[in-house]
Every structure is written in C-alpha cells, then in structure tokens.
Amino acid sequence: MPLGDIMRLDLEKIALDYIVPCLRDIGFCYLDNFLGEIIGDCVLECVKQMHYRGELQDGQLAGQRQGISKRHLRGDQIKWIAGTEEGCEAINFLLSLVDRLVMFCGNRLGKYYVKERSKAMVACYPGNGTGYVRHVDNPNGDGRCITCIYYLNKNWDSKLHGGILRIFPEGRSYVADVEPIFDRLLFFWSDRRNPHEVQPSYATR
Image (cartoon, rainbow, N blue to C red):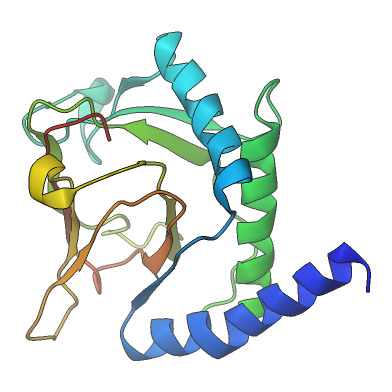
C-alpha cells in the first residue's frame, strides 16, 4: 500500500477514535512520538536556527495596545510562520499532518467545523524562571477553536526544568499537567473551557 494511503488511514483513525472523543469528553488530548525522532529533529533544528539568528520577538498580551510586552506575565519569544519559508520544510510537513488530523475530525466536534488555521507560532521560553500566567487563548470569541502545540524539548525533566503546561478544565475538580516533552502533539479547545498556564521554565523550552 502506498505510504500516503497508510498515513491517511492512520491519521483518520487517530482523529476519529481518539482526538474527537477526547475533545468532546474532557476537552484536550495529546499524542506522543508523533513524527518520530528523525523528522522531529529536523523541526527542532529549524526552530533552533530561528532562535540563533535572533528572529524571535517578545510575545504580546491579548488586548495590549501598541504591542506592549509584560515579561513577568508572558516570558516567551515568538515568530509567526506559514511553513513555506525557506528552510522550514520540516515545519511545513508537520503542519500538513496537523491540518489533516483536524480535517478528519470534520463535523464531529459539536457546533464546530474548522475551515482554516492561523500561521504557526514558534515559541521559546529562554529559562530563568520565565513562563506564561494563566490565560485563555480565545477569550473573546475571535474564531479560534482548537489550539495545537508540538513540543521540541529533548531530555526534558519537569522536576528540574519546570515548564509544565497546566490546564484548568472548566467545571472540573482537577487540573491537567502536560509535560512539554519532545515529539508530543497536544490539542485543546482554545476558548474559556481551557484556561491554562506555562509554569516557570529553568531551561530553554
């Protein structure tokens, strides 16, 4: 069977049997070993090169005028990319797989049917206790539906390095701690159902 058909079957099965039920029932889910080490390393190298070249800028807070940065609230450095830029072929491949996963979810996500996505946000927390305080990605109904995060942190030890993503699912009595480990792909609703924070990181994340 051609590789494309195998990938289609696997992605469709993952979307229908895992992502859709998890989003509907608990509001988030993640997949480990998503790309594999070789392709994951290519994505990591692309991001490292952006970082080394100084292309990442301080992340801004929603609602801030004139792009005011508040590093004590949000300590990441970011760059928005389409994936079609020179040297970003691995990121483009990752985005194509994520697009297909979401496409296979189709009309099974309640009232939502995702038609498009934003550019990808490359983000780096430089360590030194930087994080991102509790927030909602889409607090004002701006159209964002699902947040997808792909992690690139090799040999990450949350007990030493911190940097856990903590989700506070609306109406639940628990929190969900997601370690930002290499080759993990996370999905969660972008609206007020999933307030979340990035806990202080003590290594480059």
